[in-house]
Image (cartoon, rainbow, N blue to C red):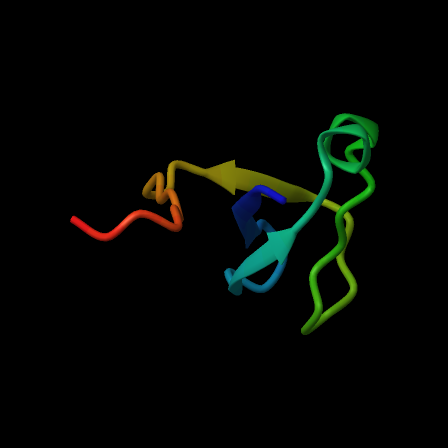
Length: 54
């Protein structure tokens, strides 16, 4: 499942959430610190995990 980074606009907390695409589209993310609903998605790194050894 994809990992998304958000920043709370109320308390400036930066946090990471693992969401399915359907959950992400609903945009019902809240800050774990202050429970604020006004959050902004941050640009984060893209990572893949494979079973092949390089």
